[in-house]
Length: 303
Image (cartoon, rainbow, N blue to C red; front, side):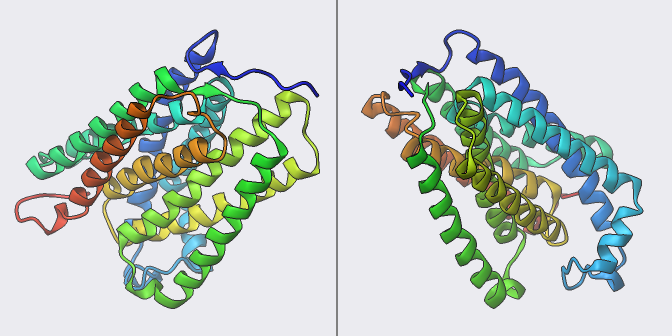
């Protein structure tokens, strides 16, 4: 097969991925809020005190319309995210999920009839500013690239190592983990889900879908199921704002790192762009860390 040239991110139809990603982010926020409410409504006897997600607890959640509705919204959000990846490079659309954090914060304030508080608003502003800056830089410097066998193998190897490390850490220290650790671990796995989805979609439209692509698809499913488990557990330890913040910042940072280092979507970007990426990422992470302390601050309210 003759290699194709890299295509600038916002040329032709590539911009279509941005509004699709925004719609997915809104559904992500609403779905996470519905799921969070259903999990928090579970009695302590069914596992809230230990944060477990056993079979009995899962059966109880399956009987809750709010949890099922939230799951349906999250599934739709995933479909929209995958569609956006068809049109745009990973490092352009993945960060747009930060819109979910804004939606979650405002919706929570409306349903609880309480102001989010200055600390919460500051943390949201940091997350959105960092992510927004990242998207802006990526939009003018990213490019769509052809997905090669080397890309597939590299991502699968790195995912295998990450899954092994997380499995060991979970087995040894899960009782010490708080919401931010569970959410962070889930965000890492969902970052791989996005990267693997980009590779599978790319290979499919290149006409190169074969056994290695199927292996990537299997890795995608394993990472998605593991990440979903960690998210449900995170809901038992922290607020919906924290879960959404962690997912909408850590997930894109991991996915974008894979997009830059493995897929080469920013190979043509100038050195200044990478400095901007680092500063924007640090700003967004600072927002998540600040949001994790909101519940400890007197006078604030977390859903």
